[in-house]
Image 1 (cartoon, rainbow, N blue to C red):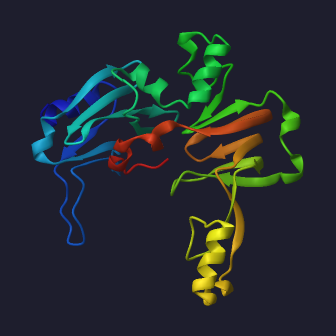
Image 2 (image 1 turned 180 degrees about the vertical axis):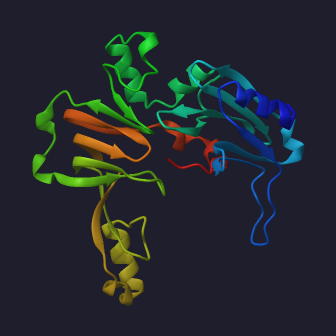
Length: 268
């Protein structure tokens, strides 16, 4: 596709797109493909930075004007990467689709971005196909990239661990503020400014034995990959506030499983 053809496809969903070569900066090599949501005097637009040699290898493979979504594909040396571009409540967004799933349409991209447990629950509850891509059905309530799944046995949630007005966030994105949160299970790790991703107790002991000065760091015990449960209001500036009656388990969409995510600059 040409740059102009790609931009025309975005107009079909009511969006503007600007396709251009990567901007070369002194401090690093720009990625060959990068997709972001930009802002100018006219509002939001899809900002597609594509190396000229890859423009012909980039195409829109499905457009759903009524849903205001389209599916974009980029062929690169390491395979085909696909991106779901669309409008969610108040803003435009782009999400990288996991490569492990065969995706050829907006509908199948929606399915691929759902956690496995969510898809299984939809099947178990016999959720009708026309309701599966809504933000709310019998299996879940969704806000942005987060799926909130009702907990069948509320006694499983240890309410002694409740935190109030607690954020949940992916990477550097704007946090979703939750009225009540419980984090339980997971792996115990110790976090400090020098080790923000955390180290296990054994790793910390080994490090301190080699470098005793590390003992004086401000270590904080946290849980890595815990189960997270939320109840009450969930607020986010880009989304309508949702109210969760009873405990819901929090599950993130599968975008982080995709290689294509490295091409997405947009973070909700």
